[in-house]
Each structure stands twice: as structure tokens, then as C-alpha cells.
Length: 293
Image: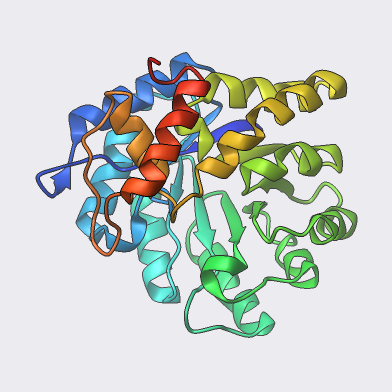
């Protein structure tokens, strides 16, 4: 199964503390209608860290049903406990997810050998396509290209979402692994350069609010339309930066609320955007015609 183009790291809408199924289904429909090529629930942007296992299962089930096989569903199933990652991955497979996205174990800072053994255990236990996820800024561990190369030997490890921020690291992964795995950008602002060196797509935060534009950016890159891709990337760059005025997913959920698509609700320890940042952020959304002026 080939994963490419703009894939959305979809938010989890809440209502009075519970998962808001109605809004979640509406978000899925919005994404598919705007050309998003895969839905990625229960990642960092989906507030996976504060979802219970039951809610995790619920969100993936709702999305699988709402998608109706129109595009792949790549469920976030990572954990810093290998046993828990296996359980979450197995559940996602059982409710119909097409693939699983597994973040490197966070907080316990495994060695490169520990990372290899972690992913090996999941790959050998659960028969579903797996996408590795490297984001050292959140996990305090960087999965090196040598480790990715070792893991690429497993048939069901099909890709990596790379958010190390290092283009040289992405290039080395591509050089070492050749066609054994696909590389996806884990950072909207690096989508163009990562696709330029051989990446196949992006798992995007910005696609929550500008799915059509992110699909266009990814497709222009994949089609080799570099001048047009460069121009669009330069237009979108300030919005990519604005989506990180505060910790993700605070800004993107705030934007969706202001656009009338979800309620303004987070799970502690995430909280509402500060007034100072909110004022700047609203101006940015108006500029991009996402809110009326």
C-alpha cells in the first residue's frame, strides 16, 4: 500500500469532556472533500496522550466508519511501553485501520538498540503496515538513519514520518533505505524540501484547516512542478509558523473553533490560547481568508 500526498494529523474534538463523534465525522467529510489522501487519528495533534484506550479505540472506529474506504486510515498507536503499543496497534487493526503510526518511545529514552527491539516486537506481533515516527523535540530520542535502515528490512514497516528537522538526516535515510520504505514529512514547513530530496508526502497539522492547499502543495511537489510548489510554500509559510504560536494542537484546534467546525475544548494539561497569541492568530486567519475580516 502506497501512502503519499497530504495526510491530515486530525484533531480530536471534544464536547463536555467526551469525544464529539458528530464533529469528528464532519471533519472527516471535510478532509475527503478537499483532497486529503489519508486520515491519521490519535497522533500528537489528536491529543493521544490524554485519550483513554477506550477513547482511542472509539476515535479510530468512528474514523474508519466515516472514511468508508475512500482513503487510508493510519492510526496513531505508539506508546513508551512496547506491550501497550502492541495492544493499541492490534486494536486499530481489528477495527479496520489500514496502517499504524508509531512514535518513538518517549520519556524513557531508549538506546538505538532499544528502539530497534521495540519496533521489531510490534512488527512481528501485529500484521499491519507500520509507519515509524521520529520527533526528537517531543520524545527526547532521535532515531538514527542506521536504525531506520535495520527496521526497513521488515516487510510491514513501510515508512517513516520524519520530524527531526534535519534535511541531512532525511536524505541519509533515503540513501540508506532506497525504496524499502517511504519518507513522509512530519513538519509542514519542511514538506517541500523533504519531497524535493525524495519524500512522498506529509502528515500535516495545517491540513486540518487548509486541506485543499496542503493537497495542492504535495501534489505539485510529486508532479515536479517546483516553481509553483515554491510559490505556494512561500505563501503558506507564515501560517505554518502561526500554528506553533503555542504548543500543537492548541492553535489548530482554536482555528477550527473560530471557523465554526468544533467546540473550543482541550484536555488538561493543554489549555486555551493566551489572549496575546489569540489576537495575533486571528489576524493571521483573516489574512488567509479562513475567517471573515
